[in-house]
Image (cartoon, rainbow over all chains, first blue to last red; front, side, top):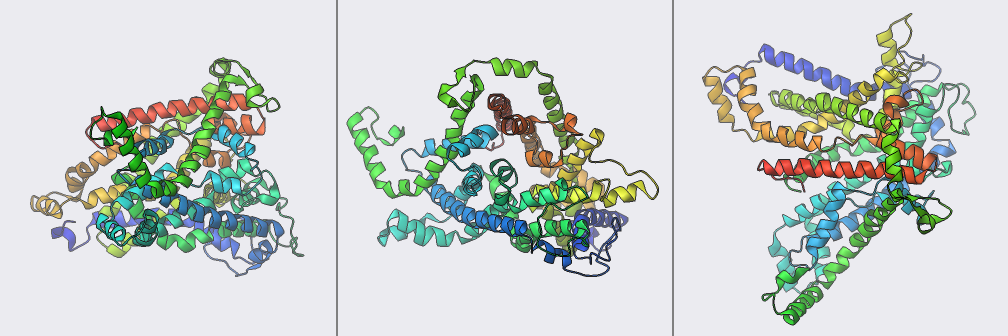
Length: 293
Length: 316
């Protein structure tokens, strides 16, 4: 920036810093409020009191929610979908994207065209629903795994990353007698670890956060994922009762707000834990994707 | 197909054997591509057959083949219904608010961040405003609920004050579009700055130094140096954004809607969900979905070709 004027902050700077501070405060306020209430002792909790930190710390809300079967079931379903879905997504996306980088591959143009077309047109909600139904996957967690497995956007970004690798290394592998699969597995993948890491996170976050597919494909409450459960706890349940069939004995004393906010926190904790990595990898990903489609 | 790889296009047997050789040579590449190809065929292309249901009187008991063809009857009924125009109005209203408020937000925020000289302050601010992008809409809607609802909303309590009636933000139609826009800004404006900040980072610092020597104020530097540098990015993104005028965030709307606000919340995707999945009128739902998909396709291709005509590289 302008180094000549950089010496002393001007009124312009003060106003700018103040406004940015305000924007950050607005961004972060809902997190702090939800955290503060969720860790508040249910007996000390006063509804609609303004909290930035709990007046009296307590893990009661978390202890309660982690003791309910519905929450543990939902957590188990979500973890299953996230782990299996992410693993399959990474495998299918990287193998297909690698094949699409082969300029001499007969039929490459048709395959690439077929992928890109899905970027601008998809069959829509109901045809996808009917397919899942025909496959007998309604109320199966596999419906979520299949419907989020690979997308044109991620394939194109991975493909452009793979194309940026130096081709000499692949040639060296071939001279050493590797087959195409050997080159892919022993040379391309080890060189692509940053992209593999970034896309593992990307797919995992997408699976963890999925709501819409779970809403339409899983009508059986015992199969619900965390996002569906949190939605029903926070938004659907009226002020008279939390919709979980609990096993804790003292649920009568717990105000629901602390429990409901604890459920929100639990639904976003994994995201917050990986956020430093997300921020690092994804800012790059946005640029990579925008440079060339 | 890949006849072009033959050195002599006229020589058919030679072309075929060259092609065959190339296919055999790449056999393991096809093996690598196979799972992805099968996935796209089954989960992206097979459902497109289902669009034909829009032209049938679909009945789940007789199935696809057993249902009668009825041509464009569903389309005619759709265009004659008042629901269609409500959905159209809501879709455009939400998108126009998005373009007026949501589109400039990351640009303004990026300009502000770009003026920060204190590196740590800048990085902390970026980390904070990028974060909501990664949250699910369920979490964002749940937080909004605790801020705005009449019984547990803290913001509601602050703005309505003691002794005043709480404001029914979530159940009064007149607030609905504004709340959607505010949510989108909270979630995505920070993340949207990345592409503009990258464009700003490409500006030669000497230009700012020269401007300072000429006595240009900070405002003038922004106006004459920074903004022109990101103008191509702004124009491209705006045109591409216009190509998505039929899209409304489905998860966001379905989470925020309730029976009191359907007059302003019903958009194509929510209608497809309500009528097709909840009420089982598959053919009507597919018709609405297809209408949206085709109009969306035309708009996206149109906006992309405009970007290309202007001499920039398109997305597709």
